[in-house]
Length: 211
Image 1 (tube, rainbow, N blue to C red):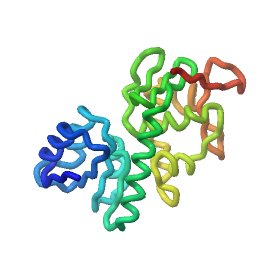
Image 2: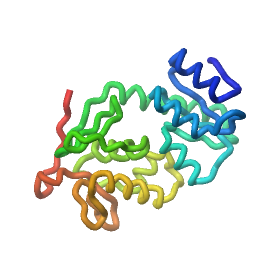
Image 3: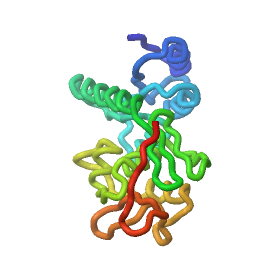
């Protein structure tokens, strides 16, 4: 395992060595860790696990949306860190063999992490893509906010519903809809939400997988 005391030095190592996973501390001496993460995401999709003392919710959301795959707040045990690393690598391996999902004119490709609507790139952030992919993998089925916090944000015992609401609002905007005028994301009041094909009619919602 190679290490670097500076962010730019670490970026150079990542570009040259193509590691399986990156551990990133946001408190770097030469550059803000989130800025480095954005630079990294411009050149690589290597899994990134952020380890930091910053525990502010807004900072966590900003970091995840900038491309982090997971976020661990100090102090933490070696066993917890190892478990998080295994989970990140497992999800990456699963995505590498996944197929694209079609829901109406919406196409979600887990391999390239691209989402398009009628051929137009939606320009989703990492967390927006994760949210859409999770909903699309369960198209037509109701998903609760607690499930989303558990599976998308990896927060099974905590987290704020507001985090989900904000990201759903951003995602809806990029899909050209709103909570009051939904098309793909339908709210089931008091329960959760579900992703549907707006042109299918009724409850005959289904997904088509593409090779």
